Amino acid sequence: ARHGVTHARDARPGRSHVRGRPPARGAVGLSNLGNTCFMNSMLQCLSHTRPLTAYFLADDSRDGRPRFLDEVNADNPLGAGGQIARAYADFVRDVWSGKFSVVVPTALKRSIGTHAPQFSGYQQQDSQELMNYVLDGLHEDLNRVRQKPYVETLEANGRPDDEVAKESWRRFGLRNSSIVMDVCYGQLKSHITCPKCDSESVTFDPFLSISLPLPAAKSRKVSVTLFRRSPADARPLRLRVAVGKRDGVRALKDALARLAYPNGTVCGSDIDVCDVWGHRVYRTFADDFSVEHIKPNDDVVAFEVGDRATARTVDVLLGTVMARLGPGARRPYELFGRPLRLRVEPGATCGEVRADIAKRVARFVRPAPATDESEGGGYELRVSGSSGTRYEADLPADGEPLPDAVSTLTLEWTTGEAAAAVDSDEAVAADDHASHREDEGEGRGIQLVDCFRKLVEREQLGETEQWYCSECKEHHSAFKKLDLWSLPEILVIHLMRFQYAQNTYFVHRQKLDDLVTFPLKDLDLGEFVLNPAAKDRAMYDLYAVSEHSGGLGGGHYTATALDDNTGVWYHYNDSVVTRADPATIVT
Picture (cartoon, rainbow, N blue to C red):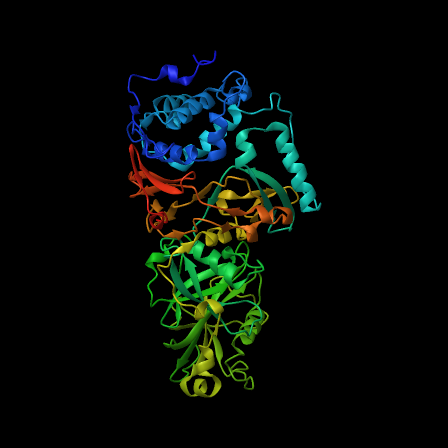
């Protein structure tokens, strides 16, 4: 017992700290208890968080009693009865006592494992997940609010951001007040929009740490030619779309939609991405097809087709024949140019399909008088086989509905007619999007601010994350936009290096090993903070990094942290402490 309070150190087994003078106060190694390098790495970062450490080291000047004990909330059902706070305090006081060169964190691990069974064994874990748990555990164990009132989530409902943010933070404070909240909590603005009725939900939520996605630096840049639905006679657009090398085609479609339609009018599910070979659609890529299997010389063509819930599509090809034979005669086509893909509504007539095609080919088909045997561009519109290379039937009259069995149509000219009617250069022409004029840029490093830009991008939720719209009374893949409203004194950033990706046959987990660069001092995040009053408090200096090396099968965690008394950086590899060159901190 210490000062009349039982501490977790009473349960500490015989294994003892190593006495000795550390290279600097707090620069103490931590013994590996068996696959606990993830915990040691995280604890080094927390130990060097000066506001927290100063809080746990402070004693009452009157009786020498640790001040944090006055705020232990043993009755909080969301906490650990104060046990995590007490065990962590003992740990910090040992590390910063100046008496030990190596500390054995057995008691702290046991206390954490008692209340979080996922950390009770000796399997390798994620240091970020443990850090979030420990910070949240400390917050609840030290929560100054003894009786938490019920509060509801506040919706903006059209009110000014500043008003809603202040009220949301006030409500959060009715249930939460601790040293962790004082220094580690910030506020996010979440803006969700229903894609069907445009209903909006705007909330302001507290955050303890920020998980940043990595933009695809070592990405695969796929050249795509996009055919837009409107205007009908517009040239296709040639773009270069960056996605992760092992992403699925759905990610490619989503990135393409954001690039080509920055106003969000078209989403990835409205687009078909196809492999064009031999002037026809060879295949339409499934959403889970991995882009790593798309070859650099593949002709990737995308068609904006809209919502596929009710409509279907028909491919339209361009072909020539040596000569027209008698009615019903089957003849092969010599295909040329790029295929088109039309959206066909239920009940559409052959006349409506003819009119749509005429608009879309007017860009490269010279006008010619229509005859009983040909359309206005000198061609005949034929039903062809799925490969488009052979005549199957004549298209019915204008007033007839397009038969359900029709999936491919071919514009048929004789060789001589095509030479006169078709501008062959315009038939394959495309306008270059700005992205297509950029260098490939594969393998470049990512800047940390790029990750923040990725975080605040508007995105559409996936099928497994659908949002319930209170107006539509339905679940939808809504559009979501996150923004930083205010930032805390201590900003905990998690780089999302581990993610799931679709392979050809199965979903697998992978680690992204792209280099993310960041300044050691003066990281300015003001451009990402919406609250004008908080922009001048968005400058940060780095003081600790938790590092993982190796693959998914295990790997190893270390840490690098700054001794802010001397300005010296130290590298922590479990019990081994060495000076670190600042140039090696960005890894």
